[in-house]
Length: 232
Image (tube, rainbow, N blue to C red; front, side, top):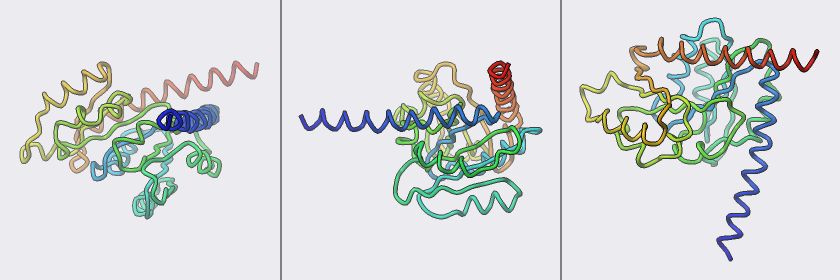
């Protein structure tokens, strides 16, 4: 009986969260904003990856929401670079949820169409469970984490639309079994796009940025067609 009540509560939480997430998605789609839920464990280089993607998505305005338990270190770094960045602190919660993101997006002036990068709290579990209004989920891994992560944290890999393997410049110095890693990835998510990148050298980001630009533009053009059709 106790387990049944827990399941019902969780269902209620997810239902309400998903309803708000759908509203965020609809609202930002109407503003021609393509939303990314950027997930990854602490230390994989999420902020560095976002910076490199921004550099390689020319012509698209970038906005960033940084999610952290505490501090605004990364937000200050982004703002110092001239990037339009905003901070959400969860003060203990291990992930962002739709209500937190909704409250923030209501205070952002999306003056131009483009991409909103939402960097989730460093965690491979909870961020994969909660929708936050995204159009795609971006999973950032690191060769320094080891090659067993798809087997230990399957949901994050199952839900990802694109996976970036970061810190590939360190492969000569550590044990990382790429074949084993990719076997786990493809078993969970056969068609996911995977890019090998290095936040230090910038390698691989041109290709990843091109993929992101193409998909963002495709979504944004679709948003505009729907918007124009609805107003005829």
